[in-house]
Length: 151
Ligand code: RTP
Ligand code: MG
Image (cartoon, rainbow, N blue to C red; front, top):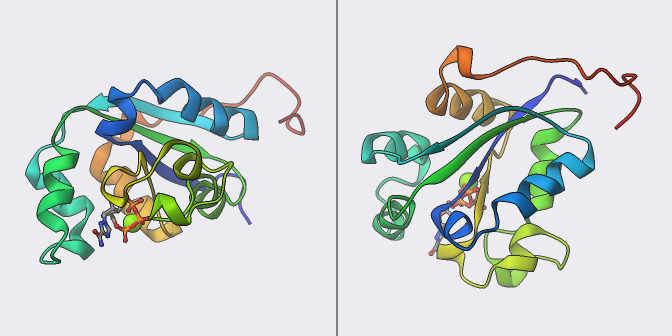
C-alpha cells in the first residue's frame, strides 16, 4: 500500500452551492490525507463525457450531465495510504439513502442525482481522472515539515 497513492475527489455543483466545500475538505485533512491539487472548474460537456465515459448512453446520463454543468465543481487531488478506497468510504454509497451517517453523502445528501461529491473508484480510474482534470504542473508534490509519522 503506497503512501503516495492519489485519488480524485470532486465536490459537485450541489455541494459547492450549499456551502459544503470547507466541511468536506476538512474531513480529508482531518483524516490525515494531503491535498496536492485544488481548483474550481466549470466543466465542459466534453470533459464530463470523458470523466463519466462508463456511463455514457445510460438512462441517467443526461441528468448527470446537466447537474454537473449546473455550476462550478471543486476539483481536488488527495494523497496518502489507501486514499482511493478510504475516500470512497468517506463519501458513502452512490444513493445517499444507503449511506451511513458519518459519510459525506449520509450526512449531507438525500438524492442520488444530488450526491454532493465524486470519488475515483480505483487507482487506475484515479490516474485517468487526475490527468483529465489537471495539467501535470497543477498537481503539487510536497512534504510536511512535521515528522512523517504525524497525521
Ligand atoms: P461518482 O462516480 O459520482 O463518485 O458516483 P459513484 O461512483 O458512487 O456512482 P456511479 O455509478 O459512478 O454513478 C455516477 C453518478 O451518476 C449518478 N447516478 N444516477 N440510477 C441513477 O439514477 C443513477 N445512478 C448513478 C449519480 O450522481 C452518481 O454519483
Ligand atoms: Mg463512479
